[in-house]
Amino acid sequence: MLAMSNLNEDLPPSEFIDRKIGELGDWRGETLGRLRDLIKAALPDVLEEVKWMGTPVWSHGGIICTGETYKAKVKLTFLKGALLDDPAGLFNASLDGNARRAIDLQKGEEIDAEAFTALIRAAAVLNAAGAKAKKAK
Image (tube, rainbow, N blue to C red):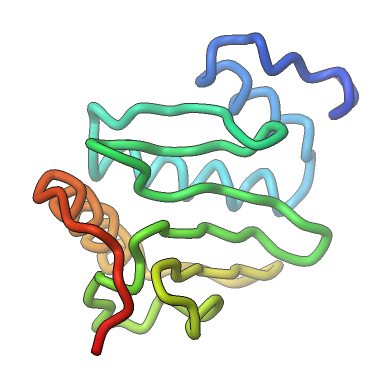
């Protein structure tokens, strides 16, 4: 296996993300992989990118969300999350920002797949509408 520091950001994004998930080798990789699968199922034509020092990014008419891994959590940050309805209350981080909202998952936590899929699709619709993320008044 390659060490994380040896991952090559010049790889095609999907391959880079595959390797990153594999190299995590723990619950964080499994969680990020599950979330990625849900994103791709919700939007089969989603664009996978790698930005910001190796951060997986999913785009559809603009950035939908980023997938970051930390020692104690996996974080999905929705760039226009403040404009999205979240009836299931998936957003649990970055709640005070003007634009972004995030979902933090810790070891053993599961996500409501149906609600997450709806959130991903709503973010794509928002991008397609050309909406600008602004603080709700």
